[in-house]
Length: 190
Image 1 (cartoon, helix red, strand yellow):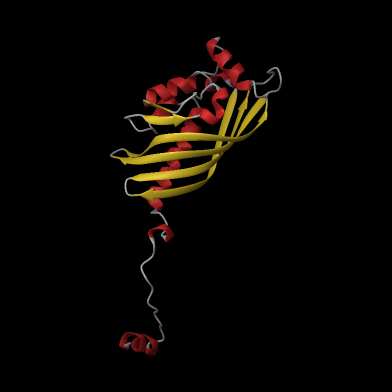
Image 2: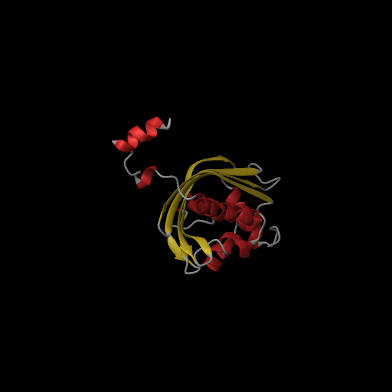
């Protein structure tokens, strides 16, 4: 214990601690921030019909999209499936531009990184609006997203995206109306 005695004489006491468990260590802030920005960019750019920017957030080799909890929202599917980024965008363009406005608020990110892979869970509050729609102007998706990401030479990319609908507010027919508007050429530009 000579180190403790010497430290005490100097007015500093150091206590030995065991190695921190990996689960107790904070994630590297630069990786965590890059992961959150990748996730947030999907909703941000989709709300602005910036489809090339949406596609850039996904693994170029494809990503599994699981919208089974909300397949009635027209952008979902009956089963999870791996799609190329351009196919993900094509699917979303069949409905999202049919809304006059959308706003995807994604927050409360819980990020876990292990090497070149990460898993993130986020809360989502997504509002969709078509003024004057029969049955009400808005439909809001309340739930969470689960993303699996991989580190690539171009940064963190989404390899799996799961939307978990917990509740919905407003007009449940609005996704169908949005898809019909896109088919009729009445959607926003994009």
